[in-house]
Length: 243
Image 1 (cartoon, rainbow, N blue to C red):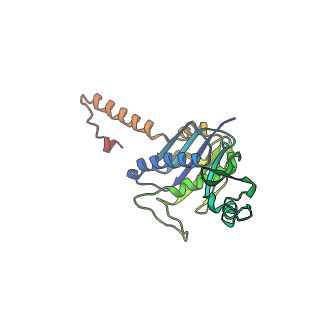
Image 2: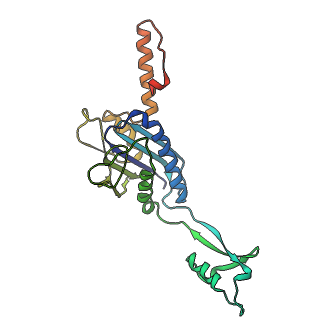
Image 3: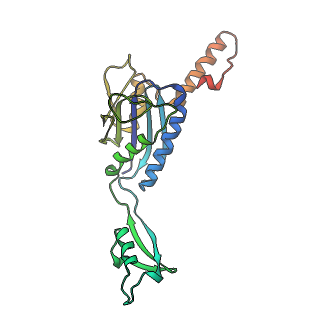
């Protein structure tokens, strides 16, 4: 059964102008990591608020896909010894590919080996993938804190990582991942348990956080236009200011 994947990085207040590019980076990085791991997905959507950034990948299978790739080796003219056995070049190629010499074959004048990949449970691969996504993010300005040899846009306070209803475990910047987020800093009380990626936006909304920036932008625009209409005027919306 396919499952959704969720990563949320909770931080101190992030400059608003950094967030649109962060959303783009999150979506691209998540897509690249899942593609590299041979884990197909239906779609990817990233979210951001002043104290969090999140990415949700929909409908991942329980295992990576399986595939075979052919790796090209040395030319056949140096692949054999005088007695017809494999040469040092051929054996070195097999060793470098972690393959048995029996797996070598000739094709179009070169030596090749065919290797099979995939079939690993996704939940075994995803914690490192999420770490890679975090480490891939870049910002106009980043900072270090405490005595850590780690840079990020702002200090990380929490990490939420879920594959379906299962929390994924990893650690960075001395923060361990889990199944809890945080709501509005004043209106919400304590950590917020997220039971699945599908309930992420709804649960945060119940704790006074509108995590979807597109929904938030639309709501703000509607309020501005309603206020302008009530005053008998028309709102002049500046897209950059609205952002």
